[in-house]
Length: 156
Picture 1 (cartoon, rainbow, N blue to C red):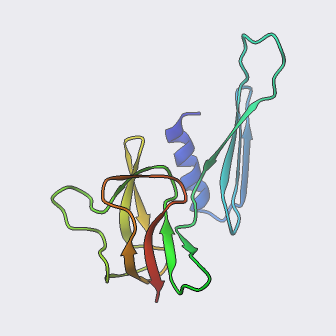
Picture 2 (tube, rainbow, N blue to C red; picture 1 turned 90 degrees about the horizontal axis):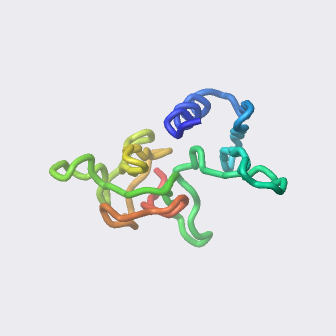
């Protein structure tokens, strides 16, 4: 299955109330499970056909749609907006445009706060709840990893 098809499948699953999806054919097996904490895609790839010794199928685990906000430290009243994927962090839609959000801005639930470019695709990262931007942790055009904090926010 190509990555664009996998992304479309994950989008369909996350837009519904489905909590588990499984598909298998001769070449691959895909299992998507959604829960309150984490969501993973398990993709079992075919083994090397040229090998003379039997091998267990390789299993790749990739994030599907991570929660956008997660708690920070227990002594802190702030939460973080984290990266749901590996890519490049952008604070604005184009070089000449205004930032999606700046320190001190109040953003509504569902409002885009940044973009993450992954494999030539720009993914909008939205606020999960109404909040105030306290700190922007990453620089514009910085490389980011899955689960890395992007913004420190105060829930309103």
